[in-house]
Length: 294
Image (cartoon, rainbow, N blue to C red; front, side, top):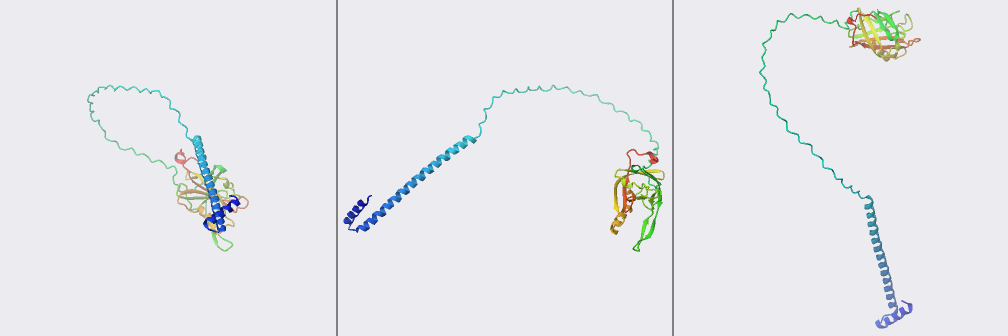
């Protein structure tokens, strides 16, 4: 609406209603603004409606595309199967007439003679008869030892601290059997010792004995076989009192039959002890009576 037309309309309205032209002009301006906002709001609503409808259309098209792309494949039409021939019906078995056997003859009782006196069976000689005396020979094939065995005792010596200690004697040019230790074939620990670098050096290579090696003792005309189970070296010179007590336990009495060999090591200092533990071995085909010497 033009400005001149607004003014003319305001004058006419004031003349008819008796209002002041100023108030009429203000009222007209307010009505114009309300119409403009109403028009703008209507356009916004129409645009939003169009956008929502377009969104639904795009969503429907996307869903249809997804369904066509990922819908499960239709299974192929089933092939016509040929009819399976039924197996022939077996004929019922022909009954076989049973034959009634003739009655068997009951035999007369046989004569049982009186038993003779049982023949006494001699008890077999044990493979490892308990020895009554110390061993007198030892053979260790793995290190080439074949030496006589003699009995040895112990000596009491005074140490640097003034204390007295019992020390086992060592045999010269032979292996020493510790007096009162176990006997072959009996429960107990049979202890043998020998020099490694002086007076025969019978146990010079005792440190080379390994588990599985065989040792043969001879006593009372019988052979006693032993198989090595363990071999190790312990420190003796310069060791603590507790360690030396532990070392001495290897030559102490035991509740099983075993053979223990002891010697010094190494060859040039003798600061350690070689200890070999062997257990009784019974071969699958033992020598009758165990009397054969090697």
